[in-house]
Image 1 (cartoon, rainbow, N blue to C red):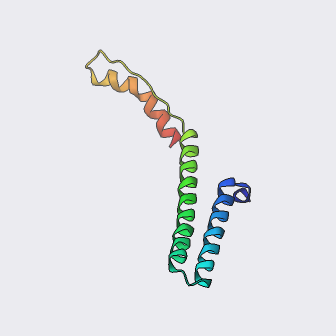
Image 2 (tube, rainbow, N blue to C red):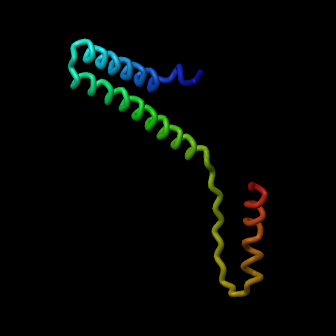
Image 3 (cartoon, rainbow, N blue to C red):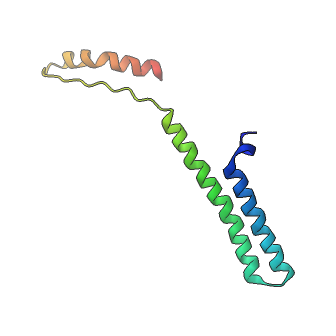
Length: 97
């Protein structure tokens, strides 16, 4: 239902129908250049629509992602101290997964 309200969808449909109409006119007048142009434009309208939807979906997915960062400054070379400082971050990551 969402796609029927999309302006991109209706522009792609209109472009495809116009291109198909051009192809039919080319067939009726025996103009192979018009037929070829109509077929190419039909395919391009579908490809451009798919690319536009993929771009929008990618931006939407990227905006929904959250990143949690933790800055740790370690002055100790003691392995246990560094592991203890990082342990809460590792536990939180395991709970999210």
